[in-house]
Image (cartoon, rainbow, N blue to C red; front, side, top):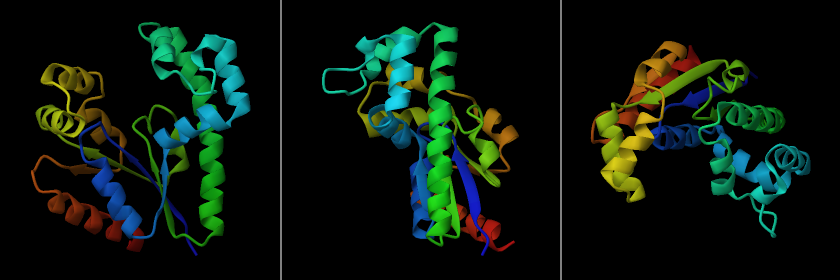
Length: 201
């Protein structure tokens, strides 16, 4: 039985979660890289030691939780520090994803989806047979983020501007789902048709 690994990416506010739910409904194993990263910051002793060795022991609290803001302050505006952080974390995330993909294959799943904002930059795309981006124009995303996260326009705009443009995803992914409408059902239909095509081509 074939096993298809789909890489899903796209900027915040584009509608990636809606597409993930479609894939979940089709029986895919969902691997959320952000959740895996959070999990590893607590559960992986070797990763924790490497992070503390590079950024100082004060990035963890007394209970062993990662102080994300503290770590963020150390890498913000320091390209080398950010690169070091990515090098350390990506290595552990890749290993964990490989482990979970093997598990999904053993469980008899037909497909798995690797969900990552930095799918391309982190090298995770190389693990996937198919890459799909969910994109929307900046103004659309700003409105959605404001409504979703209860933040003001200036902060939402800052977050959107800090991310890669739509063209970055279009040029680097095999398929792109455009989601500028107000109807999530439209995106669900688009996504279902696309994944049906991918699985049965």
